[in-house]
Figure 1 (cartoon, one colour):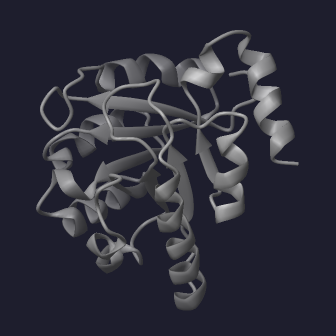
Figure 2 (cartoon, one colour; figure 1 turned 135 degrees about the vertical axis):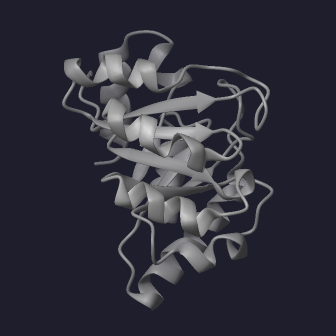
Length: 192
């Protein structure tokens, strides 16, 4: 996987976001060919309905959007009970206060740095304030979740994300436009 630690898989239902991608069957097909952590990002309505199918498919981590369910607390508990890492995502227009009540349950928080649904969008630098706020909350409360950023991450924006306190970086368009291995090396070099 070109040196990636995680394989971030975007699952979209055409309802929560306009785009439609694939489901747990693709995750099941990928599982035997990689040892990478399969980081499944569900941009779907009522993600709690899909926990079992992604767990059975071999997902290591499942990220749900706080905006996509009325039951984020219960959904995160269900993800953990299924043996996966549980993560919560927030859109650019959603305030951190929407997820404060579940930060003690999560292994990771995904800060969207674009509006979800389509690749190739321009990075929204104002979202980095959320990353800094999450670092402060994590430190103050003694929590242990990772902070992931997704959207518009390239060899320039990754530096700002790291400086803000992000731990995990999702890069799609930058990686796949050109030589994948070279682009991965460019990103890794920026983090040294």
